[in-house]
Length: 75
Image 1 (cartoon, rainbow, N blue to C red):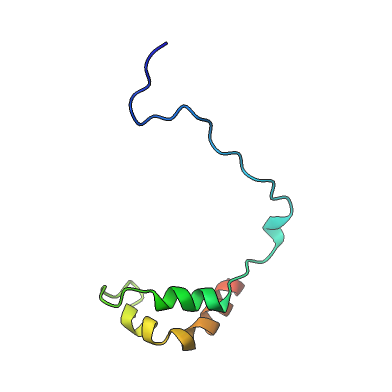
Image 2 (cartoon, one colour; image 1 turned 180 degrees about the horizontal axis):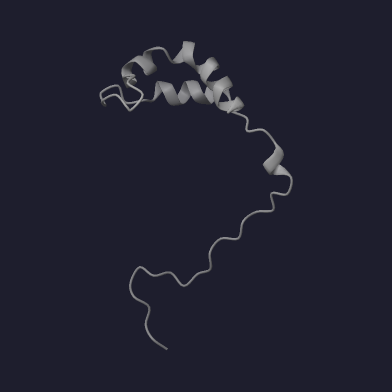
């Protein structure tokens, strides 16, 4: 039997959980989770492709959390 190269796993891939019927359930995006993510943005990083600086998103987290959570949930 040949030796395995280092870093190669011989274990089997994980078996997906039984998610029967879950694909039709809407994704629940909670306002608190969106607010928490916005509050933890690094204000010193440059703006992203949307042209909005992360500092602005962080400072307006409380005002943006609800409309963003609704938008994410409906998309």
